[in-house]
Amino acid sequence: MKIVMVGSGYVGLVSGACFADFGHDVICVDKHEGKIEALKRGEIPIFEPGLADLVAANAEAGRLSFTTDLSGPVGAADAVFIAVGTPSRRGDGFADLSYVYAASREIAQALKGYTVIVTKSTVPVGTGDEVERIIRELRPDAEFSVVSNPEFLREGAAIADFKRPDRIVIGADDDRATGVMAEVYRPLYLNSAPILNVSRRTAELTKYAANAFLATKITFINEMADLCEQVGANVQDVARGMGLDNRIGGKFLHAGPGYGGSCFPKDTLALIKTAQDYGTPSRIVEAVASVNDQRKRAMGRKVVAACGGSVRGKTIAVLGLTFKPDTDDMRDAPSLSVIATLLDGGAIIKAFDPEGMDQAKPMLPPQVTYCTSTYDCLEGADAAVLVTEWNIFRALDLDKARTLMKKPVLVDLRNVYRADQVRAKGFVYADIGRGTAAPAVADSDAA
Ligand code: NAD
Image (cartoon, rainbow, N blue to C red):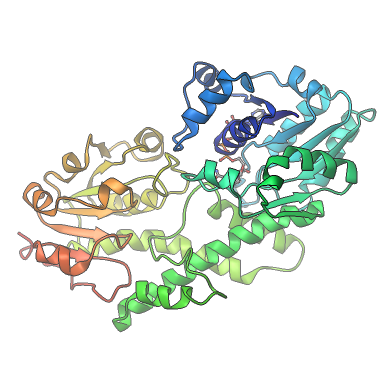
């Protein structure tokens, strides 16, 4: 099949490379000339494990290519995927669909012969109807169908998720389009991946419902963590006790600094707006978004408390900036709020992230100092805060850290360490909801 991917970011590039690996002919399009030039040279603009090799192998085999001009490729395509961004719109939090609609207009001009246009971007219910209307208005003569095929991949595990998905959701309102989508995903049919054929509107809503539910699970366990801290219970054990119940499941029950990333924050907001617009407000999701927002700043205050109530003039080493490990994505990362809170309190910030520092620099205030390694970051610090659980932060040499730091204070926002082991090394240690919170250290205590 001939496939065009409009938008070559995290989703477009991974999906395009995986479709090519299935044996399809794929052309990835992007407006960003620098990105396309880099891809043509074999450079991958994002950090995603395994992606560079997958792109190289399929480009080499002649199944994957890159361009800024969609007109020729769209004319020859069986299916054109729209994988452009749908960020929160400034002001009201609704999904900004301007990129989707702009792409739809460009695609319309280039259509030749029957083509399936597929929204892979996460889009609110009814967007497919509008895409169809836009294309029909511009090209009354064109033969096409508009399908919704939301993407569920996770950054950091994107290739495995795409190739071995829990399910594929296809929202097509006509049989011809369903047939084309079946061909596109045929290699996965053979792997017995569950394929759900539903209506277009159902597919659009399924994506938001799934993300909002996952965000709710995270937020729920985070609230339980706060309660655990007050009552002396251990949230990891609570989560295990809950998660072993098959009706609940253990995933997304890790207490932490609040969810971030390129999807949950914007998708919960967009769902809230859609539900309000249709007169059926989603009060649960509204509460989730609000609790999560407050939590991110509360994490900064947790560091302040562990430092004896003030961080003014103190150097804080921030370990990890990206919203989760194995990605360089900084969108809505909890580190942004934690660092802002600490800077507001007068702290001096040193930071280290193995992959995310280039993305972080334009998003963080200029006074942050970026370090070359974990121990460079810890040197001279009055406290360290582990924000993202990259593997290299999981086995710190605590003796070395203690000698390098001005004061041995570790705030572990991911519950990576065991309190007794860290404290045995002479550290003041604070974690999330494990009933192990130490009283904040007075300045004179932590030498
Ligand atoms: P991204 O910002 O990484 O990439 C979007 C790309 O689209 C950019 O490179 C941009 O230059 C390009 N673009 C914009 N308008 C264009 C146009 N008219 N023609 C060609 N290219 C254009 O975004 P992303 O993270 O890949 O997300 C894309 C969509 O997928 C969003 O709706 C997102 O919610 C959804 N999604 C993302 C993830 C994820 O983990 N990132 C997972 C599932 C779904």
